[in-house]
Image 1 (cartoon, helix red, strand yellow):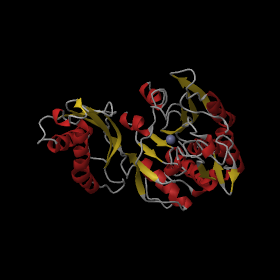
Image 2 (cartoon, helix red, strand yellow):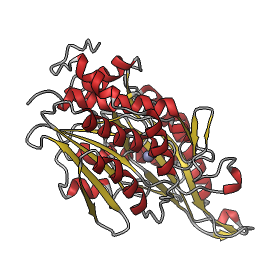
Image 3 (tube, helix red, strand yellow):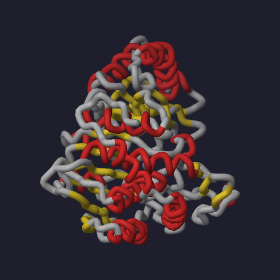
Image 4 (tube, protein in one colour):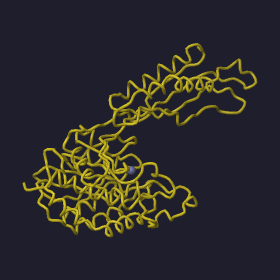
Length: 407
Ligand SMILES: [Zn+2]
């Protein structure tokens, strides 16, 4: 029973019809077919992977189009239902990161081995499990013949793993879809993520004075300055960020992830830089976060006048995104999980997803999909078959709740 009190109740009978149209064997073999089409980015050629997605959707009655900024990076827009009604868009990406050293894999990266209920391969989880569940949920909805008062768009895109510029960003910027709701498929372990963290990558550079390494007192050592700043960030910034918590998100965070400095073993360095990967929870602003680091860095070197410090924004700066937990979109996904006995607590996505483009353009967006984010981008990436089947059912039920029923 869907016992959800929300505004768009779904008849139990319709839910049953949609779930009955889901075929587990078909889903597993679709996932395997998709993994066996390498769509490694870079270079990011996804033409074959998009063709795999088009087949079953076209067969189920979806109208199919491709929108591309680059010839090798087509984006699929498959539409079904009542275009004059409300529109739900499923979005996930078909490109995958490179395999890394293939000898580190026990399973062939593009073999799609099925062992003990797991499917292995590059992209098994990130993000072909979500693509599979979205495509198959769309097929089930169409095949079931349930009445629809709205439209479903299945939008599988290129280019997520490099920037999204030719993928979701292009689709949103050009207005190729105009959804009322967006469900982005990424690895959330089938938990409902109301949004994603923001980003404020920050570069701190210390400028000193070079001298002969044998005459260090003649110089001003920039590496020593950076060491002080790293320590100040550890003792002042990190404890503060640990206190910035949120009911749905991991706490605010910062991590010094690259360091560049020094020119030669016998030269006192006049320059050293670090990159701080700063992730924001809702309520934090990118510019303020950079300023906060600037103040700590300048204070740390205040008593060494020979060292100068420069702090600047070094990434796309963006605030966290978040959908209203009481919205129809969030409640539809939650009610699907409740119907299926899956997790019903809300959470936030710690990484970046294509959802940021939709959210920034004002489309209510959540993130939901099978797979564990800790298995993404590693050797022997895998996803559990059960998770993919659950996600397929959950997407289908959420869609039914949002766009199903007589017009
Ligand atoms: Zn992904």
